[in-house]
Image (cartoon, rainbow over the protein chains, first blue to last red):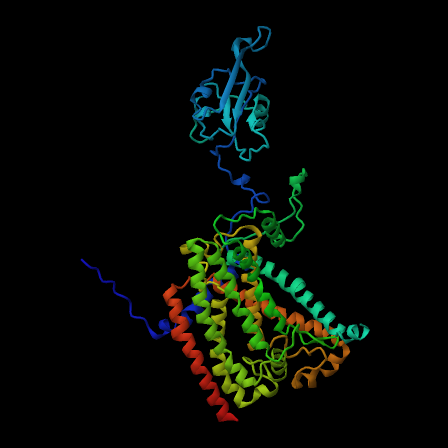
Length: 176
Length: 392
């Protein structure tokens, strides 16, 4: 069935059109003035202003490896994170800890630990799955490089970013 | 041979050349590029955004640690835009009509020619600040701006593509519709002034009050105050027609991105596109200078004297001694500054309107042009004639 659209009755002022243009101009000028006065909230000017101080505790930035208070690599190269990683960004080469080492009892450690930051999706599954609490997502988010090789974080870089976590880290603590 | 050389008016030639170079290269082209920048910043402010505010020299491309921030905020943006346009690939699609395809962007810069007739200052070192001070400069301006449609029509036709073609057709019908009301709307001004020489019109306004602000000299007569009504009408009609003539939004039918991709310049790239872009803004500058010359007293501000140190009688009596203190050429420069300052204000108004109003539908546009503006302008002429006959 045909549907008849009821057109609204326009007043003379509306028909004349120019008054509505003037009121439109007033509105846009209001926005313009607010911007000039600095009252409008605008985008953060990124490289100059940063949000780092307001990053939440649970922020998931770049994954990193941590050492414990005895300067031992927490990672025991069990490769669980490598297997769970959805985009397969992690590559671990395990090696045996030599018998003369102080930590020989731990048996294994990663000879090389690579995370391809082009692949990483910052999901945090590696952190969740790690039985040794060795891998953590920290707050670094500006990961950049000129070549693909630069974007692969190796063991040295990962420990550099991660630093030392002392004692037992309560990773399942909901407050964390 | 020597007599031939002597017969050439060297002084006039050199002055004309100097004025042309000054107006085109030192004032209008920078004004064009900074109008584009202003357009982006003002539109951003109106839409609660920031806009381009950080154009510097990319020294980091050359291996330095940081970009060099040469310019304050984004003031380098026009330079960056120009560089981008020059360095882009100039692509000519297959199937276009080569000659006209190349001719159209050249014609797009034609509105610049009509700047020759516009008095942009009073006088400087005794020389009148208008490139071609002809007696029928009003006609000259309209003749040249009327040619502006050729660029769009040729571009639309030569592109051999449907969207540019539609844009070209729309443009030609729109231009014809609004050219009429534009020409007719200005007739009351010419009737009141009784001449067609723009430089004299401005001088008349400097002495007797601007046409829309008759507050000094002969402007205080009853005739001029009665004339305010038809002049206000012709100002409104003229301004609307200038918007339509320069294809600015609410009237940018030839471009109308939402319907025609980019309208008449869909097939153009790099510098050829930039020429259309610049031509559009040059036409805007010509249109704003016409509004300023016809209705807002051109280069005159009542308390600033002209290049000979003469202000309107009222101000001359009060500040006459002060005017004599400063050299006349300084006042000449002040007049030029005042003119382009006024033009800049009108340009800001153009931008402001663009970011306020949505586009008309094509039938609405034609209806406004033919049924309202044309008739109003016609009736306005008779109204003016009645007022003039009544008061004189």
